[in-house]
Length: 76
Image (cartoon, one colour):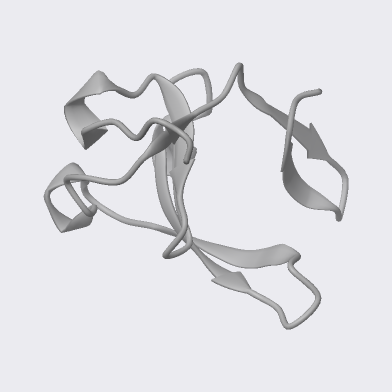
């Protein structure tokens, strides 16, 4: 099982419930809630405040690729 982290420990990461933290994004995109489609794509991001994020269960990543129209995918 992968190690999980608290939201306060994340600079770039995601939560399986559809949340992302990206400290390098524009201010409106630092904390977002996404819809996860049946095929696993993350779409329709909505900005949220830090206090609405789940506080436990986060996965760290090196960042996200913000490609046009493709949403954000984890950097390889």
